[in-house]
Length: 279
Image (cartoon, rainbow, N blue to C red; front, side, top):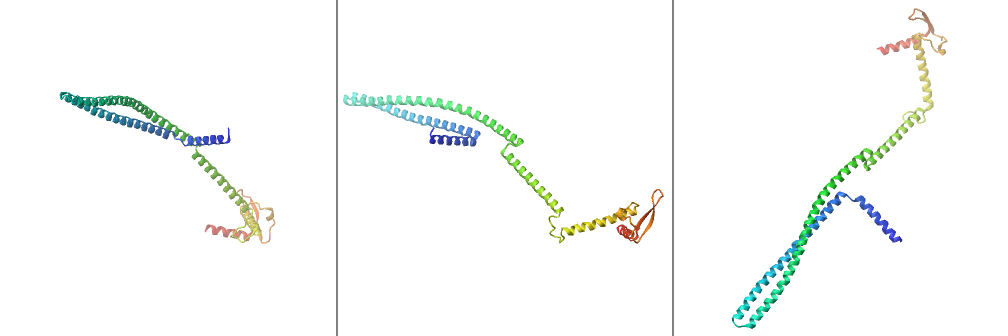
């Protein structure tokens, strides 16, 4: 196979594939039905034209028959007047007209046969068109039902083009959401580690660490105070009795007395805080 032949074959194959994808069976059936109806109309017009031509020949034949009768009468008159020459001429014209009539009759007979054949073909074609119309409507209904069923199946299984686009959109949205969640978690982690300094604060990492240590010490002191008030043992760091402290006896629920070293100034501060909170 030569290059041109192969190229032509490939082009025809591509065109055929495109036409198959673009072809709508319902439209094809409707088009075929219209083509058959157009053909039926052509047959009807052909029958009408043929009948018209036959009628013209029949009218011409009638006129010739009238002339034949006329020439026959002329021949009788000529014979009655002993004019054989005129009678001969009238009979010659009569003979010519009769010959034309015979030719017209043959043509009319041929036209009639053709007309009869066309009428038979018209009736057969009309019957075929009716059968095709019934089959066409049945095929269209089946195709539309199958098409609807296929669309529903594609929608349920996600195999259709539209559902494929929807699936891809969901996948892209999930990927984008995962990316944003990971980015937010990373920012939180870096913020907790102090990698990023607060743009609205003039404190650096060292200031923040010192503040955390100071806050932790204040919390520990307050915790020891609460333990002292509740008769709990304090941490080892606070066992030494500092200056300004005195022994305070507390009575437990069992009636036993417990000595606890309490800083009076801290107790007074705690009492003031409690009063202020209650008020």
